[in-house]
Image 1 (cartoon, helix red, strand yellow):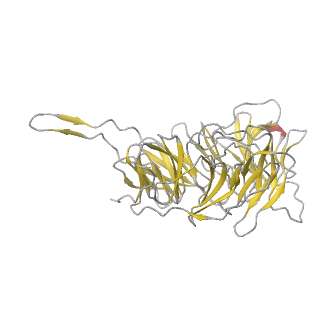
Image 2 (cartoon, rainbow, N blue to C red):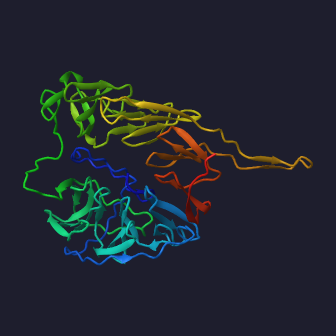
Image 3 (tube, rainbow, N blue to C red):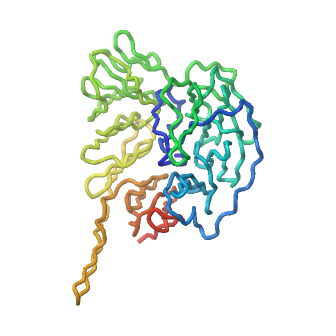
Amino acid sequence: MTGRLRTIASAAVLAIASAAPGCKKPSERAVARAAVDAGPAAAVLGAPTPLAPEAGDGAIGPAAPLRLLGVADDGGWVAICKDAEARPYLSVGAGPGLAVDRVLATATHDVLVSRAGAVVHVDAVARTERVLGPLAPAAVDDASRRVVVARGSDLVVFDRGAAPRTIATARAVSAVWLRTSRWAVIEHGAVRSARGVGCDTPSAFTGAPTETVDLDPGAEAVDRIGPELALTPQGQVTLDGEVVIGEECVPTVIAALASPPRVLAQCGGRDVVAGPAGFQQWVHITLGTTQHTQATIAERLTLGQRVVCNSGGCVDLLTGADFSTWQSPLVWHDDQLVVRAPPAGLAIDRLPPDATGAVAHLDVTLPRLTAAVTVDTVTGKRQTAGALAPPEFVDAAGTWLLYGRHVVDLAAGVVVTTLGADALAIDDRGRVLVPTAPSTGPLRWLTPRRP
């Protein structure tokens, strides 16, 4: 996973080419996309400058009302919105934070922000900031730490230890997103001025047609990125030319995975996961919404996600396993885990690394919480704390889950501790981010005390 943005994360759904084999689809919280004014084509690269020293007391953000915008999985950076100013602050480590105009894109160790009409790259490892040129659409890849800035009809690629290079496209680029370090998704059109002041930045993607661009063009010709999904005139579904679903199904394909090649289709009210070499697994729930009299591939096809979910449940396209959420609501999932909430507990399903493995299931019992009551035994004066709300998903990082006030180790399938007060986030070491008072900074990372 990458750094996570909450309030300002884009919820745009892109129907684009399959991801390259082995790549992950970033979560919707992982990347914020800002619509900004276009700058000139030439990139103006500034030298990195050190950030302000960390606060010695571990305090993050100002002592003021605030709300959390985002956090790195390793806790290396925290983005908040100071309510009185309605603008973002970015803290790397501890400290009051760097005041910015908008958060443009995030990754575990890198954050792109706009400030004073420029794109600024904040390196959370080196604790530096660097101006990359005038304000423009921008994106960052988590694994390679590659940064891409769109200037006019050009994509300027910034790789660590290398000089910037430019890749030309046919028309002006209004938005950019990285599916992997190599493949950029762009939307053409006039670049829109961003509305708001940064704490509520809209998505730059408008739903217009997108294009996939190769950022590392080599000698080899690349006709397509992933296995070809096709529908024959007879109504068969094929993957790279091999029939995986026959015409008798009258299939509606609603999702596809590139590696290994898989499709999820609705067949007469039932769903099936199919792939080459005869792989076919009927599932017990249905994610399809409409039955068709003719075979079709959905216009809003879900691509690149191993686990596909809707209000009725989740399906693992690798194994064909399904997880109903009617009685056990979905809490959280990624490409390794599905977590649901049956009454009084959590159900954790750990997905196998390949299609030959089995799903490992763990049930976790949550401690029952009761509102505190005190009674004076002489006067009978009673004090009752406010009613406790049922726990709900707060955050997840690595194999750690913050579910209400419960800190859960998903790898071991145990509740490690139950906090005495609400926390805002959890990192991949199991630390929790707590406010000084509800919705009030400064924030601090704390390691919960184990019983």
